[in-house]
Image (cartoon, rainbow over all chains, first blue to last red):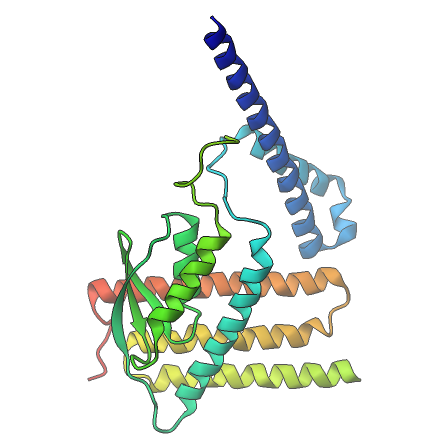
Length: 184
Length: 98
């Protein structure tokens, strides 16, 4: 009896949490849609009825549509990851420009295999996308967790760069495999 | 005046990267290496051009619009590079130079 009551209590609390998460998501959607409209068309245009209708409908749509799995990125990790990415991709550009313009064409292309330990979904996708912008690596193929990576210079140490990137992405996401299911 | 000078410098630097990327496209021996040149060099080139243009922007909305363009091109570029590389891996090179 008490167990049933407790169970019911827990589910209703879970439902409340889910409803709150849904409304929060709708609020973020409205904000994002409004900002996007402002960026693309200006503030005057955002205040027109049609624009406001579109923004509100975007929020309503996110209330009606089924919620996907939440994106488990830690907001605090975003600035650090962005700074790392901008720096690394800038170095990647300088590296490739130097090689392309050097008369001796100093490249030694090769393929390496790399086993990523990141969970499938956004973390692994982000890993593959960013690694193509790092100096000298290009993601070619993914089989399970085994990545085929093309490296431009096999004498550089691409694996340690990949491991570093993987560690950073791993730290930026909450791993669903380790979560105890506290707030879901 | 300073903003204009910086804009010119940044855009010229960006064009150097575009030129380097194109040089890589022409000089590198295979599809994969050429993809390296295109994605990475163009990403930095576009970043510098956009940074230069941001100094000429009329307001925050314009600056964010330029930033949005860079992010979208970046996402499209890296995805396209991966898809071309994967297709080349499974189907071989599109055309042989040799």
